[in-house]
Each structure stands twice: as structure tokens, then as C-alpha cells.
Amino acid sequence: MHADIVVLPGDGIGPEVTAAAVDVLRAVARRYGHHFRFDEKLIGGAAIDATGTPLPADTLDAAQAADAILLGAVGGPKWSDPNAKVRPEQGLLAIRKALGLFANLRPVKPHVAGLGASPIKPHLLQGVDLVVVRELTGGIYFGRKQRSADSASDLCEYSVFEIERVVRHAAKLARSRSGRLTSVDKANVLETSRLWRDVTTRVIRDEFPDVTLEHQLVDSMAMHLIAKPRAYDVIVTENMFGDILTDEASMLAGSLGLLPSASLGEGRCGIYEPIHGSAPDIAGLGVANPYACILSAAMLLRHSLGLEGEATCVEQAVSRALDAGFLTADLAGEGQRAIGTRAATQAVIEQLELPCQVMELRD
Ligand code: NAD
Ligand code: IPM
Ligand code: MN
Image (cartoon, rainbow, N blue to C red; front, side):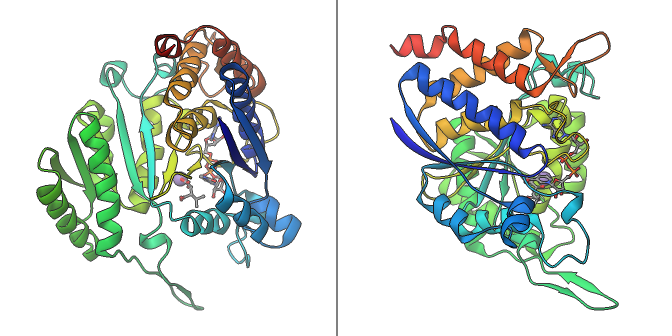
């Protein structure tokens, strides 16, 4: 198939991990006879430096016309002055909003190679396989913001429509898995959470009677998530809670550098982005873990291009590279050799060149 993929490297380790994912996508195209065209555009701090704005019109135009978008990360100390007029992160929020990407899927499935790096006891991690569906275009991120000399405020707002559509998305996903859905809120304190709980209860009762819904308060959820992660399948939550809980959940996998995501809307085009940031502390050193971005590319193949077999083969290749001990510094334990970004990427590409069961079965 032909596909136009817009690549937004961004800042810090963003360019290093997107380059890795593009190499893997090129290998997929070679192996399975597809034609992917990559169009690189500016976003974030890099775009501020070049054009003065974190989301240039040219980037948004290209994204709107693309079949899918692969994004690295934005931000960094250079642009982090609290009084700065423009910020890299505004570019990311603006593109998610402009494309209507309200559902951010963040799967967490620990691999045995991450056990050593995880601070959680291995027996708690066996069989963990969950997906957080994070609402991505509403809540406190997008409400009115105010700042005066002696106070500041961020408004948290949700409409029934915004809650319904993300809950439906999560419920369909739950239905395709174990049928269990956990909705996370702070309904004991926040009005937006009380609306969230009402709407979620109604949508599941009326439209998804086969889905089992459980409500959980976000503070105790933060505890349960690491105390009994196997208890969860699909978790749906509002924007900021989902942001925080998934960085926490990355410790189930052992590293932020292992968690991919897909930001989806009503159409087929989505943004595929690792959940981690620009990691300024390791940027430019060639040591960033590329697996989260490569696994995001696998989600791109699945969700935007409909290439389920190829997506599974990429996931399998990452898994086999990990099995074979190709560990970046964030994963390597004492006595284990740490490899760099390029070597990890090469390991995935080599695995991809071996037979992939899914595709063999299909042929
Ligand atoms: P971060 O995720 O960039 O880094 C947190 C820690 O995890 C660092 O020690 C980093 O080295 C490590 N890490 C992250 N990704 C890694 C990888 N692939 N391989 C190895 N180690 C990795 O979070 P932060 O330091 O709080 O934020 C830095 C900047 O990134 C901020 O400007 C923030 O706004 C931005 N950010 C952007 C995104 C995004 O673009 N989607 C996401 C989160 C944070
Ligand atoms: C993420 C990031 C972003 C968010 C920031 C950089 C705006 O933390 O993608 O998780 O909070 O959504
Ligand atoms: Mn985040």
C-alpha cells in the first residue's frame, strides 16, 4: 500500500527515536512491499527556534493531509522559562486538538527483559496487560488560564459529549478484550469528575451492557496500579489523571522508554508518540531507548494503515530483540551490556528480516 507519513521529530531525544522508528518502517515497507513516503516537519522548540511558533501552519497543513503522524517529543530547558511567551508543549496540545485526537491509547504489557529495571516485585508483574485510554483534548489542559501578580488559575471543564465519546472508545476496546473497564476520577471532590462518573455509568448501562464497569478514585488507583496491576484491563480517565498514571505505569514495564501510544479521533489519521518526553538529560548521546517509538510505529501500522499483521511483526521483533538481550542503558542491569539507540534499532530490523509467524500464517 501507499501511505503518506508526516514525521515530527521535535526536541531532545525526539529526533533520535523517530529516526529509529522511520528506519523500522522502511524495513517493513521493503519486506512487505509497501510504499511509505516520509515528510519531516517542525514542531515544539525546534519550530520555535526556526519560525517563532511551536506549530507552524505548514506542519499542521501537512499533518491534516497525512495518512498518519509519527511524533518524537517536544520541550526542554532551553524553552522552559516560566515566563516564556511561547512553549514547545503548546504545539503538541494544539495539533492534538486541531486533529480532534481525543482518545490516547497507552498499552502497558511488561516484557520479561524489563523485570530487572522495574522497582516492582516480579510476581506482581506476571500476566499484566492493560491499556489506559486517556482523554486527550479536554479537561484542565484546555480550560481558560489566568495569571496575575498574586494568583493564577487553570479551569478544568468537561462536556457530556467529550466524556461520552472517549468512554465509548474505551468500552469498545474493553469489549474486544476481557470486557472489564475501570473508570478513574476524583468524584469525591471535583464536579467534572461527578459528571464523568454519571456519564460513564449511563453510557455503559445503556450501550455496553456486556461490559463490566468499575469506578475508582484516582488517588487510590495510583496505589492499586502498582500493588495489583493484573487486576486491570482497560482503564479510562481524564486528561491529566491519564498523563500521570501512565508515567507511573511505565514502571510496570521497567522504563518510560518502553511505552508507546496512539492518539486517535473519529477518522483514520492519528498521532503515534512514545509517552516519554524529550529526556534532556540524555539527549544527543545516542543512548535513548527507541523501543517506545518503534512500538508507536507498530500502532501506526495497525490503527491508521490497517496493517495488523505488519504491526504484530514489529511488536514481535521488539520482543525478540529484548529476549536476545539488546538492552539500552535504562533497561540494562548490573553485569548486562548496555547498547545505544542505533544498535537497538538494528536489532529490531534484523529480527524483522527473519520469518514472522503472523505473516507466514496469513500467506
Ligand atoms: P522525560 O520523559 O523527558 O524524562 C524522564 C526521565 O526518563 C529522564 O531521566 C529521561 O532520561 C528518561 N527517559 C525518557 N525517555 C527515555 C528513553 N526513550 N530512553 C531512556 N530514558 C528515557 O520527562 P521530563 O524530564 O519530565 O520532561 C522533559 C521535557 O519533555 C519537558 O519539556 C516536558 O514538557 C517534555 N515532555 C514531552 C512529552 C511529549 O512530547 N510527548 C512528554 C513528556 C514530557
Ligand atoms: C505527554 C506529555 C504532554 C502531555 C506534554 C508535553 C504536553 O506529558 O504526552 O504525556 O501532558 O500530554
Ligand atoms: Mn506525559
